[in-house]
Length: 386
Image (cartoon, rainbow, N blue to C red):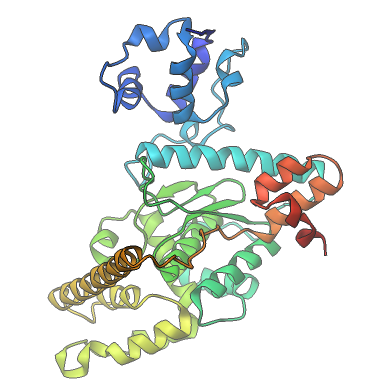
């Protein structure tokens, strides 16, 4: 059996970073094992290479990280987990993995930007929660609101491009259905200029998440969020910062249509709860219909019982759609039909793409690194240099 000389201080550093105890790490390592690993086997100065491999499956640092004799110091620049103690979500281990990954991406992006002489200085002003979120949205819309498109995916891409023009880089991640460690977050903001989004079933929800995190950027207050924006029950329990970001997102996206929402009479069975109006405004703003009904509840123009009924209707409709898709996939599999659906790829920020291109052209990174970062095959590199 091959043994490795482990720098235990580096492993302890990772435990502090992920806010894990030794017992919790052992729990993750011992899942699906018949014979449980002991603390001495994992935290001794020499560990079997097989155990090191299991540790790295969790932390994804590369084997050389654990044997490097140089000790690491806690640095606030390394991670938001060293900058903040509490977040709006009780973070799962999968969420911590995602956040740590994009902290590393942020550091790499910043370094490549400087080496490539890319300017990424902030172009937008700072605000505080004392500023009226509606008035702030009116100001920021002038700089960041793109040409509207009813297709929410196209509109999301346009927003990300607008953000790039103002030196805000947006990363999107896609979580596979069979991933063991699920990330219980929808988005987060990392200072000074990084927003991270989780691909959601609804692009409209993802759009709202993006603008909510833009609110954190404008306030320059880092945060990691789970459920955002379109549920009144959650809205009631939010702190002032989260409510500010939600209100900002709503007003940024709805624009002048808020006059119609604000002028509606109480929603009831008599006026069919304004379903037709809500549907039209949703298609004209890419705010979800449920988010608009939540705003009616915030404005107190729909009763809680009626709002709850509408919420249940939307949830049931969503479950029915999922069940229909599931049955279709099963039928296709039974009848031997191959799916034409390609593996989903995250939306890339033009600011990130331009930075990686420049770093490649100037010889700062090689072809392998270029392909890895842009998820492109070597034979397709030419597409990025037309």
